[in-house]
Amino acid sequence: MGAYSKIKDSSKRMYNKVRYKKYINIFDFSQKVDYKIEILAGLTVAMALIPEAVAFAFIAGLSPLTGLYAAFVVGLIASVFGGRPGMISGATGAIAVVLVSLSLSHGPEYIFATVILAGILQAIVGFLKLGKLMRLVPHPVIFGFVNGLAIIIFMSQLDQFKDDAGNWLTGGTLYLLLGLVLLTMLIIWGLPKLTKAIPASLVSILVVFGVVFFLGLDTKTVGDIASIKGGFPPFHIPIVPLNFETLLLILPYAGIVAGVGLIESLLTLNIIDEITETRGHSNKECVAQGAANIASGFFSGMGGCAMLGQSLINVSSGARARLSGIVAAVMLLVFIMFGSGVIELLPMAALTGLMIMVAIGTFEWASIRTLNKMPKSDVLVMVLVTLVTAIIHNLALAVLIGVIISALVFAWDNAKRIRARKYVDEAGIKHYEIYGPLFFGSIAAFNEKFDILSDPEEVIIDFSESRVVDMSAIEALNKLTERYHKQGKKIHLRHLSTDCRKLLKNADEIIEVNIIEDPTYKVMVDKV
Image (tube, rainbow, N blue to C red; front, side, top):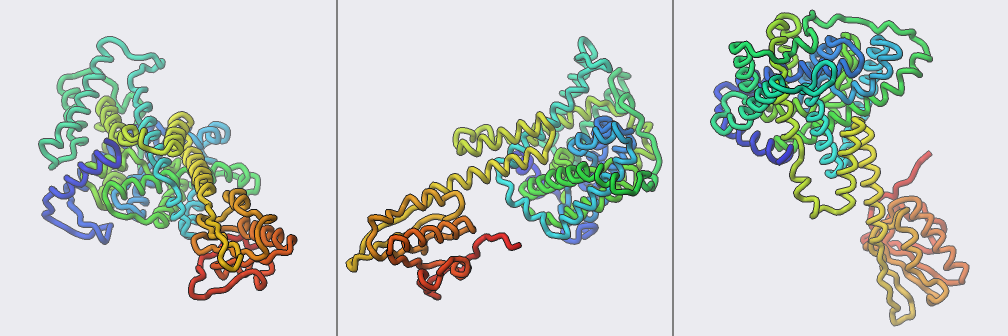
């Protein structure tokens, strides 16, 4: 079972069984808040954010604090002002992959400027209410995105099984790590079957920490990766030349960051909507992500977006309000400023086991079981998006490819659905009753329906069961009527919308107007 099934079922059961003792509409204005669940879930997420933020900063060629500051700033602002309570945002691998080449060639100052510009672009998308375009993303694309992201999360954990030289661990070191990872996974899997009073993820981290600490086991810790000690994120205006050349340099990166961030955030929003059976606000989320990235750039952060893995940890722990995300961001800052010494002692095995369980829960296993029942085109889209997401790590490109292929398949399928019922009435007039949409893809099949040379002197084409979709269809009708006129034959077009009548040539001569029965749809036309 995957993100649409296992996590959804467990989170619904937890939501129904939790005993709410104190409720207050805080930070959310609509959701009832259980302090214990929200705080514990936020604490768990904060611990899981640390190694990922550090790893993503390394991927981007930046210092660990750059990723941690981004996780704090983006996480806090998105949690307070975002369109999806319970969703977690922070530094992500998708953003890091986009920024790495710019970071290596021009340094962190250009990264900060790029993140600010990307935030402005994201906010503009939200203000223009373009977030609703995510409705155009089909389910096979979402399945592919989720499965690819699950593979990325899993594969990123394999580095923990290698030494500093990149060689696979062997012997006792490997067995110790495997044992601790399996213990973590066992607690996360088994504890919810006994009680849901405390998030299983948090319990697993504390138990493994206790085992390692009290038994004095020698295993890799967070501190072995990098120090997370720091202060409050410093306000810093990027030191870059304010000229047109700088804009041309950072604009392509900013555009990709903005696109990747919004795609990942809005897809995560849709998935959490499915799990919690509630509805978020996509345009509000776009504005919040934009504001978060603008602030991140001014506070020495690498930028970020919504994180599906951490969001699933949060939701599966029972969190439903904004408070958990706020707690996660604030606790992350507390760890950086005051608790780095303790957090650096956390075994990486515990966090590795946690993220592997997230990957298992994220993967949509139902999509595998239903492969033989899905249309081949949907299977192709899902597999392709999964591969592009997992191999190239370019989420925006993967989703874009999936949407384009899905759109082409949809157009092809609808192009074959154009039909014509033909008959000649007692007056000798031939009727063509058209069924199916008339658009650029179905024009060729539409034209094949007519036998202009053999048709009688008068022809009626009825569109009551059809729809003229675009200008290509209008032009096809114009050419068809011209061909009939060249043969000296009279043609009538029935049941066309007012929009069609305005766009057709010689409309007054060929169109029969029936105000009661004529449709009212609009033809898609480019207005210059």
